[in-house]
Every structure is written in C-alpha cells, then in structure tokens.
Image (cartoon, rainbow, N blue to C red; front, side, top):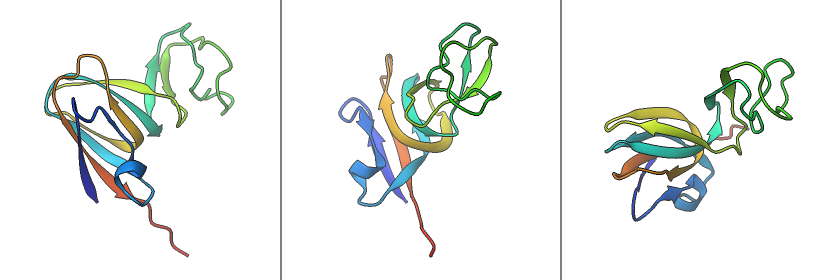
Amino acid sequence: MALVTFGASQPSAKPSIVSNESGFFGDVTCSAAGNIIVKGTNIIEHLAAGATGVGHIDPATGVAFPGNVTTAGYYEALPATAVTIAMVAGDTIRGGFTEIATGSGFKGWGHVSIVHNTVFA
C-alpha cells in the first residue's frame, strides 16, 4: 500500500500515475474543509427529483439513466462519473476511487492510500 498527498501543488491523482501497478484509492483523509471530486466504483450520490440521471444507474432497469430521475433518492454513479463530495477537516472516506481531484473551496491537503489489485490464477 502506498500513500499519496494531494492539494494545491498536486490537485489531482490517479493510482496508475503514482504506481506501476493497477489499483485504487482505498481511503481519503483531508486536513481542511472543502470539496473533492472522485471517480470509481460503488459511489452513491443523492439526486433530486428532476435532476439529470445521466452517469448513474437506474435501479429499476439496472442500466444507465437516459435522462432525468423522476424520484429523489440515492443512486449509484457509473465508474467514469465525477462525483463531488464535501469534506470537513479530519474526515476520512473509504471506497474504490480511481481518480481524485480537489474541488472548489479546497484549501488544505489530503492523503490517499493506494490498494493494489491482486490477481490469483
């Protein structure tokens, strides 16, 4: 497992850039309040009724929404969809993030740990 720092001098990171192996960011910790933008797997986002559902999975059909959601709720984002998460100083979030970037208002620094994929034959 490797640890990567991001912030003003390194506003975004991908595991493949900082590691020769494929992997994902297993957790993100921030020093100050602000927004981060993540992509990855198993990211759930709240969408308001009438908001665009593009980039999210329709739980009724199991495929991507072609347009707006009809009911407010929590929807899984597709892996290539950027999701903004507001964080408070000291917050740690865990997931399978393939990309992370600082968003508007982010003034601190953050650490992410890289978890390498292991393939068993």
